[in-house]
Image 1 (tube, rainbow, N blue to C red):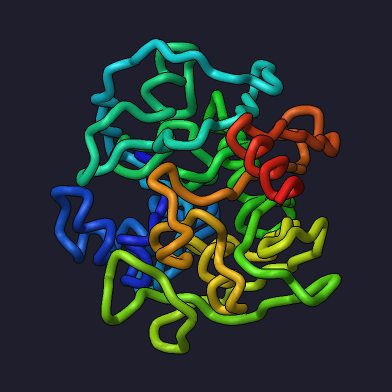
Image 2 (cartoon, rainbow, N blue to C red):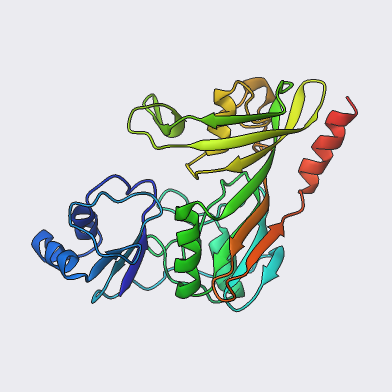
Length: 300
């Protein structure tokens, strides 16, 4: 059996076409397996023409999973919570969550493999146990599954939008509202495929709720709650409001960009535990860099 999670690079294609691309089977054989229920999407039977979406879990029975080809690396991980099913980690800024074909530097996954066993569900064996991602320069709370049962249960909450994620973010400018809801679809920027933007072309629904926490001379501290989880969502929506994330060298003001990246922190994470079925809430302390910047802004 092989489990694969659809990422942004593989989304928006037919299920049978995707399965052919990750196996040595013919399209007719793949189609027959889908119709027989040997290939499931989010543990449900579907059609060969189903268009896969980001974070869909594809389960292919009677197909040997590729062995993980990742070298464990010892890291000093800040673990907020751990049990036999999962870990909640306070990811530091500057650490990539999982390796990819374009980056070979040490990642959180390398450190996790040195520390514990993980669910082997992931895309191209690069994302064992990784239920959701944070950008390299975003710090904060991240849940990791230790086994496949936990992964499937947590991934379903993410897809159903019942996993709650709250961020703290410093933005450029004095935010004039106590709260704001941004409901604006996000897709790839046609002028720069490495970036995302608000667009109606090949875009997906994206909703972010912002709340004002504190204002400074030229900046603001906001709380951001994700209703959806698109790539770079908070950063793109902040730019869309004309209050870009402070320090963001991709979407922020050029004069306020920071080589160390944006001031964006995943403060709180809430989900139902896969084994106990109890609601659990975790808070990740702010990094020293984030705290120092807040004090600097307060003293301006």
